[in-house]
Image (cartoon, rainbow, N blue to C red; front, side, top):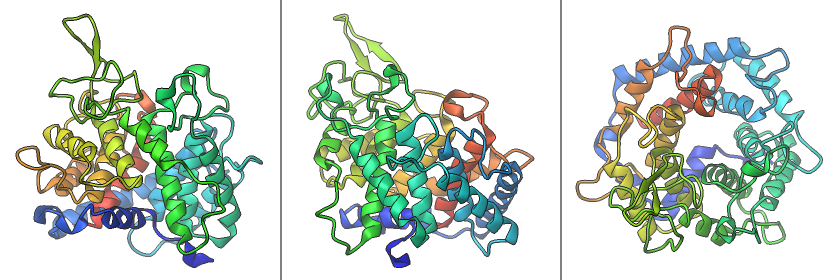
Amino acid sequence: MKSLFVLIIPLLLACASCNSVQAANVSPGASVGNGSLQHEVDLALERGAQFLIGAQTTEGSWSNAKHPAITSLGLLALGKLPGKRSPETVEVLARGYKFVRAQVRENGGIYVESLSNYNTAVCTLALLRLGDPADLRVIEGARQFLVAQQASGMVAPELDGGIGYGPTGVSPKRQHPDLDNTLVALEALRACELARKGEEKAALPALDWKAAIAFVTRCQNMGETNPLPNISVQPADRGGFVYYPGFSNAGATDLPDGSKALRSYGSMSYAGLLSFIYAELSPADPRMKAAREWLGANFTLEENPGLGEQGLFYYYHLMAKALAASGGDVAPGNNRVPEGWAKDLALKIVQLQSGNGSWTNKNGRWMEADPVLATAYSMLTLELIRERL
């Protein structure tokens, strides 16, 4: 049974490679080794790990116990540390996984009282990463739970195919699907499929991947493929993404005719590209090309484009995932990500680490003022980059 489980990131990168997203075309500057930088990254990871170890509660959770996803992110960060695990780390991981398993519900979800879809998806990724055969039943239950949450027959049909925070304990305002929750669910579901390898899949409930692609498409500012009103046809927005059809966290531009055009922004544009990759959309598809062009034109490490410091560490995390999965060469011509993006991102994150080994965002939106959450994002980003150094 254990052979069914593999590391999440390499699996998804292999999936992207099979879909002709050529990881072999990684620009040289992104992959050439740098001993000094690798040493800095290793030291930062070690200090981050010590912070997480010291921050774990006696019950095995981190931060807000009502959101086991935060604990799972901590487990993912500690589980990918280079080198041999210390007895202390082994004990911390065991406590954390015990806590996560205790949150499994009869309906297959893994959550406490709210944000059921998000928590279930992240916890599923953590359990897959561990690869314990005893978790097979839990993982399959979580997979079926996530599949069942895909929107269909919504009053607002533009939301069909997406996945939201979850109906459990969420206000009606937040029950609708959005691109971020759809991304996390797609990652977990694709990882579940890949982990099964040769097992029979036909009899299992499956996500409607075509509907998921259609939902992601309706989150993209691209008039050729997205027929919805309020999408931006401004050149600066073309190819980028918004939070969900009809709403952007970056706001909207007032047009001369009185209408509004939703602005694209950084984190969701990486989320859109990743969602297309997990859904195995062809890299030659114009939606993929437009997404890469927007990301290349708006590449920066100084802010989350369109949002400033809001969600900055999550932006870095999605950037590393998306650029690794697409080989870093995300756009032709002048709209290119710098060849040394991986090294530059690693240096940026190392420089932002606090004296106690943690990371934190002074802008508290999306819980990034929580040092556990920001530290988990940062460590996962550095671990992914370390594999490329």
